[in-house]
Amino acid sequence: MDRPPAALTQMSQIGRYEIVRQTGNHGLGSLYQAFDPVMQRAVMIRIADRSTNPGVSFDQARQAILFDAKQLAHLDHPNIIKFLACEEDDGRPYLVMERFDGKPLSGRLTPERLSGVLKSAALALDHAHSKGLIHRNLTPESLLLSDDGDLKITGFEIARPAQYLNSDQSGEDLDLLLDSIHYMSPELVKGDVLDPRSDQYSLGVIAWQALTGTLPFHADSPITLLSSIAFEPPELRGASVSLIKTFGRVFSKSPADRFASSSEFASEFQAALSQIEVTPVVNPSRPVPPEERKSLLSWIVVAIVVIVFAIVGAIAFLRPPRNVAPPSVVAPAPQVIPAAEPARPAPVVKQKPKPKAVKKTEPLEDPTPEPPKLKPIEPKVIHQ
Image 1 (spheres, helix red, strand yellow):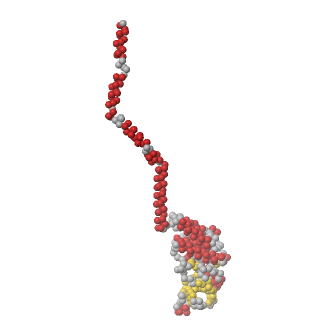
Image 2 (image 1 turned 45 degrees about the horizontal axis):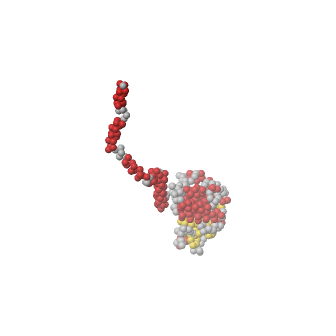
Image 3 (image 1 turned 180 degrees about the horizontal axis):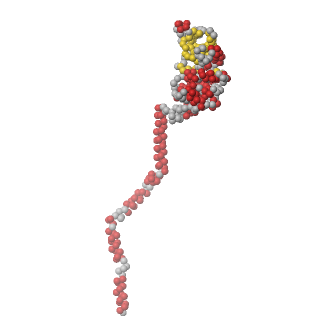
């Protein structure tokens, strides 16, 4: 138990609760870790404190504490810090809440771990929204994670009903949230009407930061950052196409374009993760893990081998005369080759003298030598 030393107990005590230490300011009061000696348990106490906000009177802080107690009394969810009691000490009202040994969400989470955290947070928000409460200041520090993996949302003690947030006091609420600008919804920045989808936007920023390690908006000054949140598109890189599409809807400037509930957003996130498992290289900008890279390389090698065989088969099919003709002409080929072999030596030089003999016989057979035989016969006939 976080029971304080005796000396500290005598100096710091409210009602029956022994103060352990102050953990900070929250809304219109100060937060303390304390110990309940009656129930023997650690608790958290929020006390109306004049020094918390100089612009708010003690009576206003007191009324706000009592108002918050009535709202918290309606919340009963395993993922929300439980409200225990509202008491007073010397005219100072204070809230007593469950002490949860968890650490604020920080750093990046694996997609699977983030999916579980997102689902639990969404269920808690939907429960609060069903009671008419809007958190309006959801940040990573609002999500407490235990070593066992349990999650609880804190900060509902400054939650407000929608009709209260839409009143003239919304400007004062905005002043209380300037330390968490990155997670504010566009409608909260512009002072428009708030509904549960404002918390959905803030949850989306928390989830995107836990997934990628970056924020959707960046600026050099708070004023520029507020303007970017209200009017500029978010910078979404470093995730798959399906996840970017899911977060793009959560970060819509108009609440009507977002999901109907935080749980629907969590379900779409899980569905987007399932798509990544089926098609691991959906977005080239996503770094491919070594296991996926080896698997992808194996498929590429197999694909190249198949393509090579397909090309060889196509060539064999499209060029049959050169590759198929020799085997089909094997039978007649030997018959033509021997006939051609004797024909080739015929015109060889060895047979050239034969045409010379032919030339000698040609003049003997020529009819031109007959005229000399007729000449002597003609003169004989003339003399008679």
